[in-house]
Image 1 (cartoon, helix red, strand yellow):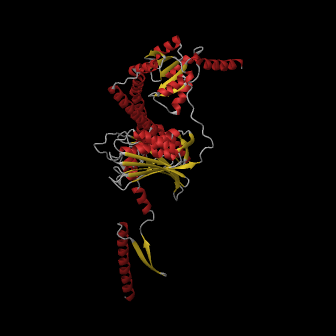
Image 2 (cartoon, one colour):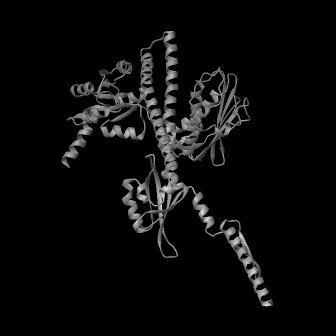
Image 3 (cartoon, helix red, strand yellow):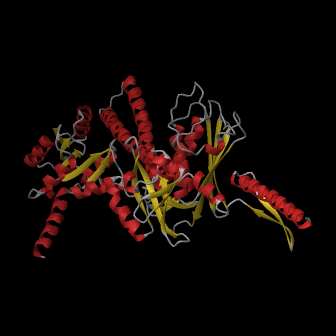
Length: 553
């Protein structure tokens, strides 16, 4: 009886333990148990029931790239949520289908090559459910399971945002290029009226008109032409400097003398300000024209922002190894928030209503760039609005040249009457050009378009032909090329008339056959220098000798 009782008790204990095990198994399956605590020889130990793969599964499910596991044949065994979103199809409808079903037809051959290799990367396009093609980057690798079954792991990166950003950058670059072209075209168009006005001034001066109104008009026109020409030059130069397309013609420069001359020129723009200058002798190396731009813009800026009754002090000094230009005024000053940006493009200070002088906000930008090209620095300082400002330019000083050549004087004995053909489509500019040349004693022929100009050039064979390169019908370059193909065309001097003064523009003129390159508005002295450059007979003889040497060779 005792044995029977023990057996029943044993069965009851086992049944209870079985029920406990079944309940534990149920809880494990339901995810209600995270871990077991097991009492062993080394004490209590914790065994986690979470799979070590769970964090990686979560990573794949939450990643921003599409992910899929493929058979070696290319069928989809698994994909994450992002992949199904890319193709616009529910997860359950994606699994089991071949990947080719979602690839653009043109990309299937490339991906097939990738799949056979078992690894690699390529660009492709996925087909969305709504028919939209999505640019993606595919990255493929191979893995093996415990059963040595090969699987292909595919990562799909959506390139839409990247390509949109690239497209936006391309558009910005195109717009920037268009802006540069617009600025150059604006400058070119401005030169046409400038050319006519400039020629009109020369006519007034040559006619010796002494009427008070005529003298006043001449003064105003001359001043405004100079102002507009300077604005046009700044527009062109700032674009060239910013893009690194400006070349310096370096020479030793008497910096003190240059500053004195610039101050005299700026003195014509004064409206009641006091301008004082003192300059210690010092030499610098640089481009004379660009150095004049630097000083003119710095001093001109002080004049612009100093009211009537104010004072401007210009100082040149030697400090260590530097030539230092300081321009100090007691004018409007610079606000603290503007001071760090005062040399940025298109930045200007506030202007009062009584100051009518304009400005494009490019002068100081040009100064900074030109100073940097000369190996120097420029800085601005101000204690705030109404307390004036100080601009300081530092340039490396150099030794004074051992010998200084005196400026050459024009050989007036070469002046004589020339027959000049003017080919210009702007009627006002052409008329003023003709009158200016006739008053200087030259015979003038005219043409208003390219075809008529070429015929006149061939028929009349003038001494000089001044040709606007931007002509309707037949441009100036083509006129020069066609005429230079004629026999004895070297007898005629060809002068290009254009609004572009870049090295590329000058080289294009030279290759077309022009002898000289004049920029609008035409400097009358430069034109007269061309007309009296040398006896034309000597020029013809020299060219004939060159041609004979080539023939004998």
